[in-house]
Length: 430
Image 1 (cartoon, rainbow, N blue to C red):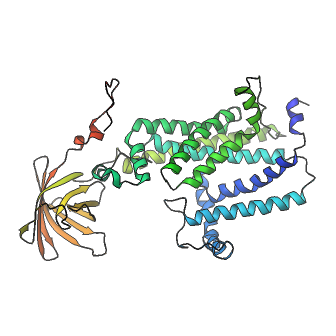
Image 2: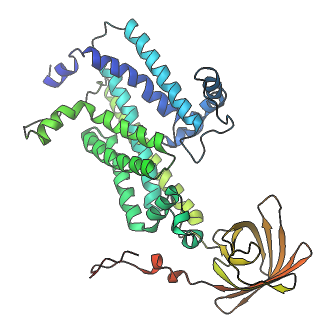
Image 3: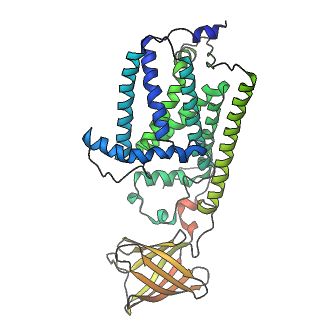
């Protein structure tokens, strides 16, 4: 019997057994109930649990922990809703109770080597595919888009911390690619020989994401923290030897991961063929999906008709010319068309009105309909003059309106035109 085999048959101490039981319940439950697109071809199946949880978690919150919130809100763009926090409390509760019962009923067990192996496999795959997912949407630049036109005209101090982070991260394509490559490198977690290297890279990537989420108030704190915990969980058995190697400069050799033996060669070939087929299919599917989405939503997607920032030069309303008074809530200051089917109008007092847009380019007609409760509607004719002039005129209700615009050159923004410089005689911090 080899030395490694002997070590894997050594009895575990009580602390190791108890912690294993707790994590063996907690981590699979978290993964099952927070799939987050990690297991591409199983996402639909894993969402079935929500049919029960969306009724049970509000009940648990109200009657067991006495916490009241808006029970109609579930996980959405935010992963830190009250629902998500209560779900975490429930998972911790189940894990602690389950660990206690398991420890009482199975106290004579010496070790859980096989169960630990499969738990680590599950965590490795979940962590790797979650980071591959997020890494690819950074490389293809879908998660953090270029600063929108509305961002460019928004006063700096009016941005939220998350908005500031999204603008900072979205500004640089190179930084997106760098972050994406680091996250995609977590694919090394999927192979036994590179698990430790993959776990270090995953820890670095997830710690970076977690710090951004905490310090810029991005509502993905629960998931990012869980990914850090999973990275540490994979590295935990190696901590002592890593400490001796990096801190005490002692010669160390990491133990090979325990792996259950296959009784038949065909079982070995079949298992590994299935593994590599799933990895390849998942990565190819994700890559293809993101490339197709980039054609619709990414920076390279076609721009809408009349895309741009239009500064108002003059405006007539009800037959009267409106002066550009900064407190005026009627006179327009800018019209911004950033996305297909939508426009934003900024008033002189800096209030924002949101509209849906319908262009009829044959008739040169534009219909603006307010998304507010008043459902204000403008039926307008438009005329494009030269490269940078736009005139619209028509009716809103029974009142006449005419607005003359000059299109702003996006390259006039310092953020856009500054560029990259190898040599800087002085810091260009504006």
